[in-house]
Amino acid sequence: MCQCLGVKRANYYRWLHHERSQFDKRWDLLIETVRAYHETYDHKLGYRMMKDYINHDKGTAYTEYQVYKVMRYLGIKSRIRQKRQNCTVRAKDAKAAPNVLNRDFNAAIPNEKWVTDVTEFKYGNRFEHKLYLSVILDLYDRFPVSKKYGDSNNNVLVHNTFDKAVEAYPEAHPLFHSDAGFQYTSPSFQNKLREHGMIQSMSRIGCCIDNGPMEGFWGILKCEMYYGKHYRTKEELIHALEEWFRYYTYERYQRRFGVRTPYEVRSEALKTETPAEYKIPENKRIMKYKQEHYKSQQATI
Image: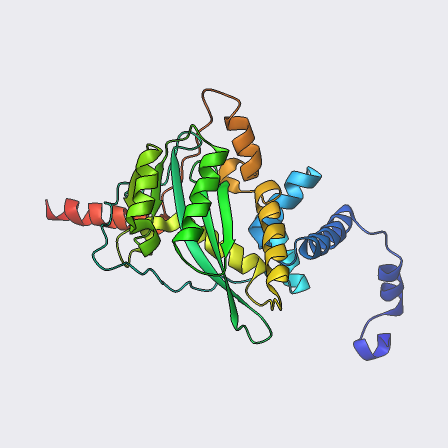
């Protein structure tokens, strides 16, 4: 073999019996750790989140590039999100509320701003059945304040979700933002908001980014537990959703919160009168646009 490869036998045996360096041992350890985390978290983690999880749990200081190299070496990739189709249906003669939130997704304290939406899942042997999920999300910590399942996307589903949130936080009077779907523009739901001292805010038709955090939440959920899966029964689908909500709330670290979970952030905030603020960094594309726009204005002066 050595002769075929043009390698001296002495060099081959020297390589075969050499003591592995600290770098080699560290590389092997990272390979095994990445492989284990990839299986433990059901292929959900990209290289950035993989780095956060390993460093947080193991007390290590791996870089994103090191984890990226290992994942590429192992052929490991996270799931890719699919684009969500806009399915907002506004009732005829519906009275839509103004967009009070106005894309200000920062919140200084828990229960200051709630966003909500309903999404659809398909299940069955031929995906012939549908399950609807309604969620209310707190913008402060991205904590799921309330969730309800239903076989129909109707007023009852939305009302039950709202009632559950109010039951959990009876003293809360947040700004309540949704799309302009028929459930949220119905007089009965608007009366509920008024009764509980909440100001209603609605996205403009066709402007999904007006409810960006909710859209992003759906994207994460479906990417991590729905796309590429086939749930045969309603019970199987709901069980998977419940497991994902447990993982998201208590185990899924978020960089914006200093690599902590929504539950950790919320628990800490509710214990103090001056909760920590977690400002959302401005979108890089928007920052680039503003810089270019500013330069063009300066050039014309």
